[in-house]
Image 1 (cartoon, rainbow, N blue to C red):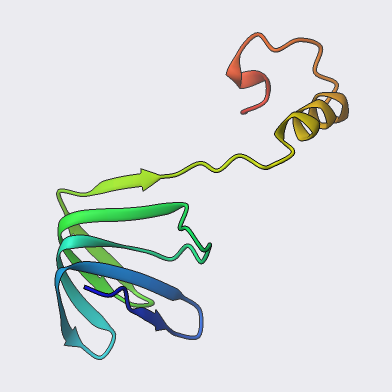
Image 2 (cartoon, rainbow, N blue to C red; image 1 turned 180 degrees about the vertical axis):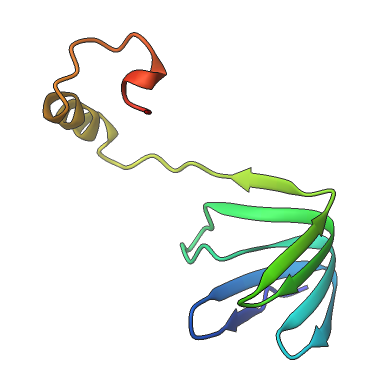
Length: 101
């Protein structure tokens, strides 16, 4: 099924599924599918579930949900890391909590 884009004042939502049923003005029931609000050309995250009730601008109910995240490192990751170590005066990297507090 094609991925529709539903826009409102605040939110762009992209969703797909085996079946997508419109059950209200801004409400959809999705079976075996998912959605994202990430507007990157390749979405960085998506929520997938057996059943999704998506109410645009309000709430989402999911059953048997899976949260998928695709990390895309910056092209200049080494340069950026070197700059951040200098900016934050990091002496040595002994644990992840040094940077991720």
